[in-house]
Length: 224
Ligand SMILES: [Zn+2]
Image (cartoon, rainbow, N blue to C red):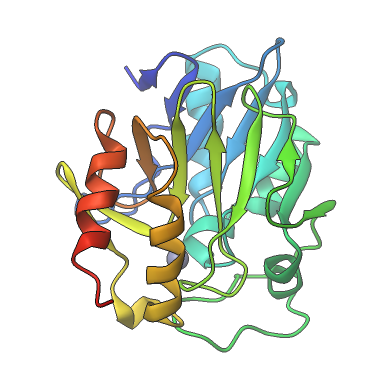
């Protein structure tokens, strides 16, 4: 059962290996439609489409695909899923440029497998009519235009690669894969001020209860 919270599914079968978890989330919208949050590595679309069939959701019921950032393990199946669903695709305006390979991303971590031009770009604080209403928070550091998505009604934070789940704790994603760790710390401090019950991380975790406390515990250890 991969409906981890009411209306929130963690898509099964997209992990490239047992020790490298990639949590692609499927969010029920207020009406009959759905939202996909990140897409996994190239090839992960096969598992996502199989999962949709299993839960009896037509691919075309997905109306929006939201991206947290440019890295290949998040955007690798973007084109495949966009073609199967005809969904509108969304990214922060900075990240959208790198996803389009204009310019090519030269920071740490794998760049997109192929260029893709998203349909809609947003800026910090914009609301997106998806998944019951989301606020897009620009959370740079891991990448320049990294975005976390906050669902206020149920106090959910989809944190992309800002945080890395470690059991009931969270860490920042390691510096080897991060553009600028002090900036990620600033983003983490900002997110620690949100009321969060469930922290939906992309790698490791998620922390379904006391996610906000896990974030506050992390940021207390940062240098002042
Ligand atoms: Zn990443």
